Image (cartoon, rainbow, N blue to C red; front, side, top):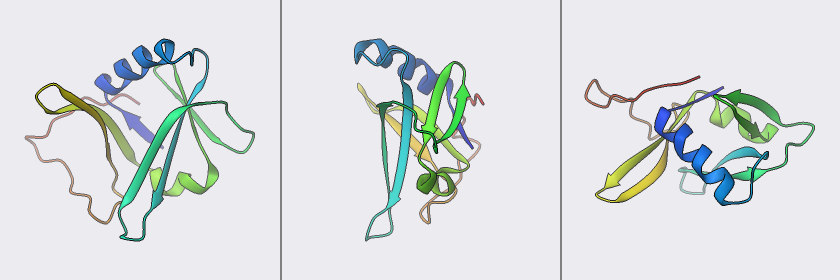
Length: 111
């Protein structure tokens, strides 16, 4: 379904206790905007009966049924885009603007 980089896993695990979300699942969401770009959302939440569920390195991930197809094959990473500014990024082959990483864009993958 999805993969997470080692840095994304580390950041998610650090964020859980800080946001009083210990024991909660990480909900990932995506939708296509009017300009045909994909907007992503994430946050700690309770799992629902019809959610797709996956556990990666101890992180329980839930995705609503209407987001599963759009997020399928996505790789989530946590990177420093500018000095001192770290962000989660989504590498999604379902995005019409997606450009696959080159050999210079190496990331560690955990699934």
